[in-house]
Length: 530
Image 1: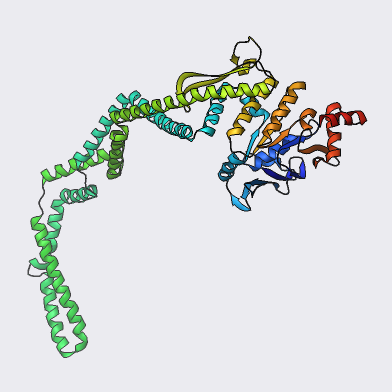
Image 2: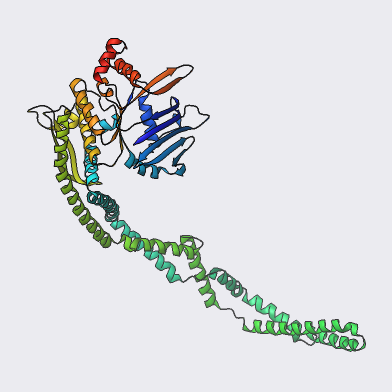
C-alpha cells in the first residue's frame, strides 16, 4: 500500500505531505482545487513523463517522494525534477525502467483520460489481453513470442517484396558489377605499374641519345690513349712514391686509389649499358598500349584502381549473398508465416474462452452497480494480422431491456462507461497483485442510487486493495477511511493546501459537498451519510 506522498515545488504545491491508510482513501475538494495535481505527482514519481515546466520555483528542483509498504517492507521511490529527472529507489540512484517495473506491482492509476481511451475499439484487445495475462503466464509468453515473430516476419516480408520489385534491376546491377570486376581483373594492373611504364618509356624514347652519350663517357674514361683513368693511374703512382717518403700523404694515396677503382667500375658499367641498349619499337608500342589502358581505366573508375576494385567486389557480394538470395528469403518468409499463423490461432483460442468468462464477470459486476438489465459481450472477429494477432476485439453492451447489443462507444452514457470501467477494474484487482488502485473521478456522470452502488463496490474492493479515489460525491466520500481535503490558498501567489481531516472537519466537508454550505441542518445530513 501507499503510506505517504511528499510533494515539493510542484506546479502549485510549495510543499505537501499526504498520509494514506489501508482501505478507502478519498481526495476531495472544490472543483479546480488541484486534486488531479496530486495524482499527476504520484504518476510522475512512478515514471510517467513530466516536463520541467512543472517546477513552481525555477531556482530549485521539484521533488516527489512516495513511500510504500509491501509485505512488511518499506519501499521509497523519489524523483527530483530539474533540467533532468533523477530517480532514487530506497535512496540509491535508479533508472526509469526499474521504477516502471516496480510500478506494475505497486499502483494502478485509472484516470478519466484512460476511461475515454478505453471506449475506442482499438484498445479493447489490450484490455482483454491484460485480463488473460493476469491469469495465464502461458498466454503472456505466447503473446510475447507472437509479437517478436511477427516483427521478424514483417522485416523479411519487406525485404522479400523489395527484392521481387527490384529483381530485374538487381540482375542488371549484378551483371554490370560483374562486367566491371572482370574488366579490372583481366587488366591485371600491378601496384606502381604506371610509374614503372613511364620510366621505361623515357629510356626507350631516348635510347639513341643515351647510347651515344654513355659510350662517349666510357671512351673518355677508359677508351683512348689520353683517357682519364690512365692519367689518374700515373698521378696515383707518383703520390704512392711520395707517401713512402712522407706518411702525411697516405690519406691522399688511399683517396686516389678509391677514385681510380670507382672510375674503372663506372667505365665498365657505361660500356655494358651502351652495348646492351637497343631501340625496340615493338616494346615501345607495347608499353604505350599498356599505359593507355591504365589511364583509360583510371578515368573510368578513379585514380586508385585497387581500392575501386574492392568496392565493386563488396557491392557484388552484397547483392549475391545469402541474405539477398530470393529462394532463401522466401523459405524464411514461409517459415515465419507458419509460426505466426500457429501462434495467432493459439491467441484466438485463449481470447475466445476468456472473452466469455470476462463478459459474464462484467455483467455480474454491472448488476451490483445498478445496471440490472445490462448485457455485455466481447465480440472477436478475424482480421488481417497485426502485432497482436489476427483478432479484432470490440466490446458490445446494452443497458436496457430488449435493447440490442451495440458497440460500447455508441450506446453507453458517461455514467454507464464509468461503471463498465469500474467493473473491469474490480475484476482485474481481484486477480492482480497490485496493492493500490487509484481512481480519478470514476463516479463521473452518476448520482443517487447509482452513487450508492458505486460506493459499495469501492468499499468492497477496499477490503482487499488500497483504494485512493478523487470524488465530489458526498455519498461516496462519507464512507472514506481516510479523508484528504484539497484547497487553494490565495495570498501573494496561488498555492494548493492539503489537509488530513479529523471527524469534525470531515462532517463539515461532506456538508459542504452536499449543499454548498455548512450549517446545523447540512451537518446532520452529513452524519446520516456517514
